[in-house]
Image 1 (spheres, rainbow, N blue to C red):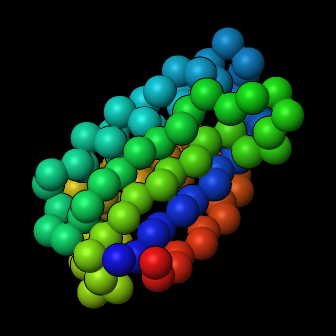
Image 2 (image 1 turned 60 degrees about the vertical axis):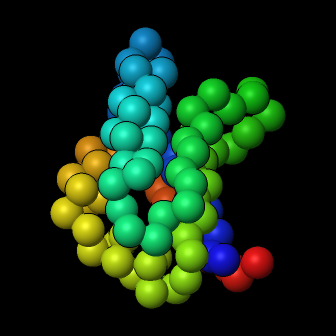
Length: 99
């Protein structure tokens, strides 16, 4: 099994009053991929960080194989969701690993 973890930082120019809306929309779009991508076991977005955090959102997803993760990366549904996320974030960190 492959874990795919992403941490994002929202753009600094997004007003405080809009930041939670951006996080919730990213969560809705990404978690909406559940059951729609071959080889994806699970997907969850944490969009409510504690004040001690230095990231604004985290994605944790699991795939049956590296091949399934590659398919997810290229899947048009994922690309559409990722397009929104890219529009609101300034930084992205990724860690993929086998468990």
